[in-house]
Amino acid sequence: MGYVAVKGGTHAIEESLKRMQFERVKSGKFLDVDTIEAGMRGLIDQVMSESSFYNEQLAALAIKQAEGNPEEAVFLLRAYRSTLPRKHYSLTVRPEKMRCERRISASFKDIPGGQILGASADYSHRMLDFELMDEKEDHVSSWLQAFNTEHETDDIQVTEERMPKVLDYLRREGLIPECPINSTEPDDVTRTSLTFPASRSEKLQILTRGQTGAVTSLAYAVIRGYGMVHPTVGELRVGHIPVYVDSPLQPSQDEEDAYFIGEIKVSEVEMLVPATVEKENGHKELQLAFGYGLCFGQNETKAIAMSILDKSLEGGNKSIPTQNEEFVLYHIDSVEATGFISHLKMPHYVTFQSKLNDVRKTRQNHSAQAEKE
Image 1: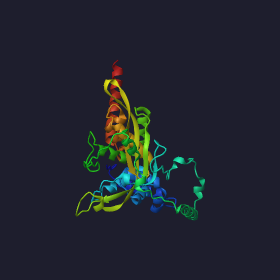
Image 2 (image 1 turned 45 degrees about the horizontal axis):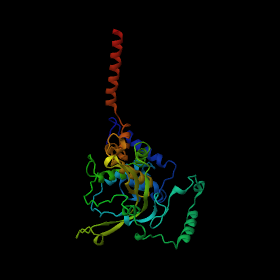
Image 3 (image 1 turned 135 degrees about the horizontal axis):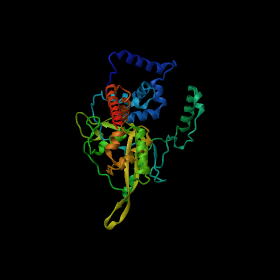
Image 4 (image 1 turned 30 degrees about the vertical axis):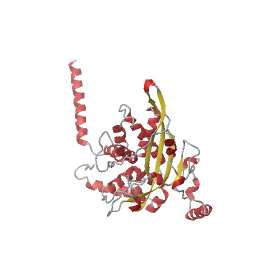
C-alpha cells in the first residue's frame, strides 16, 4: 500500500525518515542484534510466529529496526519473507517426536513421562526485579557457571518413549474421537487468497500467524460469552521438533531417506472441551471434544488461545462472531489489521473534501427549509 502525500513531498518524507533514525540513536547508544536475540526471547518468538518466518537472528534485526514495535517488526519480516525463493518443502513435522523442554497437563496430575515445568513465569511472583538494573556481565558469567555446575549431571534429554501424548490415553478409553490422518496437500494462504468456507489447513495457518493479542482476546470472548464450557489443557508442550526435507534425487517421503536440516522450537497445545451432544429421543450426552494449537517459539498463551478458536470455528454459526470464520480469520491478521488502521493516517484529502461538501450542502438545505417554514 503506497501513498504520496502531495507533489513536492519527497523531501519531507526523507527528512521524516532521518528523524526516525535520529530517535533510534539520539541517546548515543544502540542495541546489538546479538543482544536482542539473547535477551528478548519472548518478543522474538512472537514476531516469528506472526510472521510465519522462523529465523531468530532476522527477527531480532526486525525488532531493532522497528525499535521494539512488534507490529512493525512483523511487517518487515513478512515483507522480507515474500522475497525469498521456495526451494524445498519439508516432510510433515511430527510433534510427537518433540524434544520437550516443558510439558504440562492441567487435566491430569500424573501423566506418563511426568510433568516438566521447564522455563515459565507462571510460577513467579510477577514482581519487578530491580537487581536487573545493575546486572553486569561478570554477574551473569558467575551465575551461569554455578547453574551449569549444579545441573551438569541432570538428564535433560527426555526420550521419545517417555513422552507419549496425554490425549492418546483418553483415545484408548474411547473418551475422545480418533484423528484419522489426512494426507491432502495443505492450502497455503501466503500463495493463494483465502476463500470461504476455509479449509482446516487455512484456518490453522491463519490462527498461528494471527496477532497474539487479537487471538487471545477472541479466545477469551469465546469462554466469556459465546457458549464454550470451561476448557482444560489436556497437554501443553514446548520444545524442538526435527525438520526433514526429501531427497531431491529419490523422493520417498520417508525420514530414513530424507535430509535432517535442523529443529524448530514450537509450543503445542491440545485443549479438551466438554461438549453436549443430542442423541435419540431427546437424550443429551456429555462428551469431550478437543482443539489444537501450534506456533513458533515459546508462545504458550497464543497456542492455548489458538486451540480454543480452532474448536470454536467448528461450530460454524455465523450469528456468533467467534464461530464466524470470516469474522475471526480476517480480523486477527497483524499486518492486515494494523495496515488498514495505520493507513487512516495517510492523505485522504479528496474523499474527505467530498464528505465535507456533502455536510455543507446538507446544512444549507436544512437552513433553506427552515427559512421557508
